[in-house]
Length: 149
Image 1 (tube, helix red, strand yellow):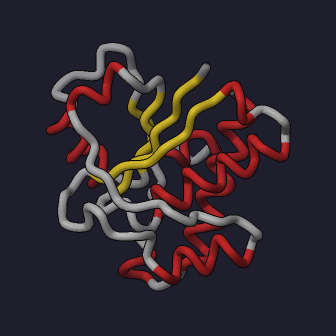
Image 2 (cartoon, helix red, strand yellow):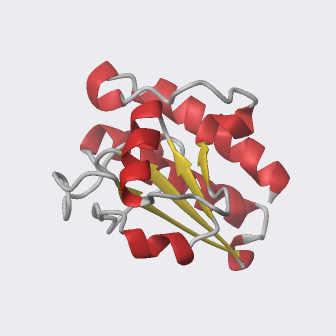
């Protein structure tokens, strides 16, 4: 069982999109039983809030539901519970290093590393308002990850 955690700032846009896109890809490939997928925030400001409506609508446009998902915060003890932490941008890398002071098992990666773009960020659609671009970038990262899982 491989356990994958998507991470972004508030856990209401990009990381839940990653969680549910990957779950959808795994389901379609008949591999969902071999993986556990979740998402979390590096901040606490959105904890308990549902997925942001424009992100929810973008997922729905692709036939993906995120019903019931609410924002949760990443905790230090999560390091030992998950195999892979996929962050969306360089700011998330800085913030996750505060939660996990060390990454001895090299579990923390940028999502777009798996799309062949190791230094690129998934821009935050909260600010850009471009949820379709965020979806496309996250999908590319998830498809690349699928090839390696």
